[in-house]
Length: 193
Image 1: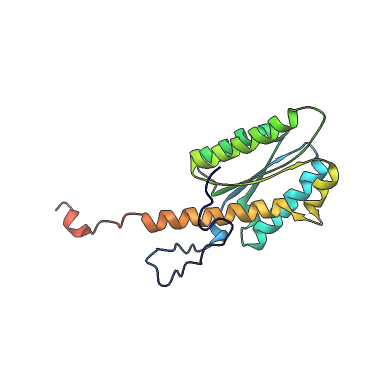
Image 2: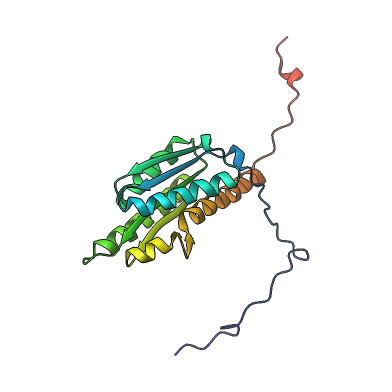
């Protein structure tokens, strides 16, 4: 039997960032400059349409112009990673929001689709260094899905869009913080006379 650690089960003390020497990245959200792709499934379309509406509402409420939002539909969750990857490869999008609904059936197919679609979306995010919000519902039944698509438990499409925007701003802050300073060049010295 392993020995319990000293702080096991206890909350660690809060860090006073003002007294520490930790650099805190403070991203500036500029959603009006963001280009966002939404990839949504057609399977369980009535539920997914609510997720799409929630995502678009969240994006526009944050300041993303509707003209900067692109929506693509795919048959099911299995196709989400490939289309998200194509959007990421284009270099035209700052964030991608994947939306879908998978409801458990009688076979292990549910587990395969849930796990592999989530894994594929994570791979897209890591491989292309683009923010990907995962708003794919994995539910036991339709009632659970409806509760998460604008029902009693909120709208996971909106939450996925908000998460993608926040991750996008952090990634941009990292790029800005660690970007090399431009070299001091006197353009007049560089001119051939």
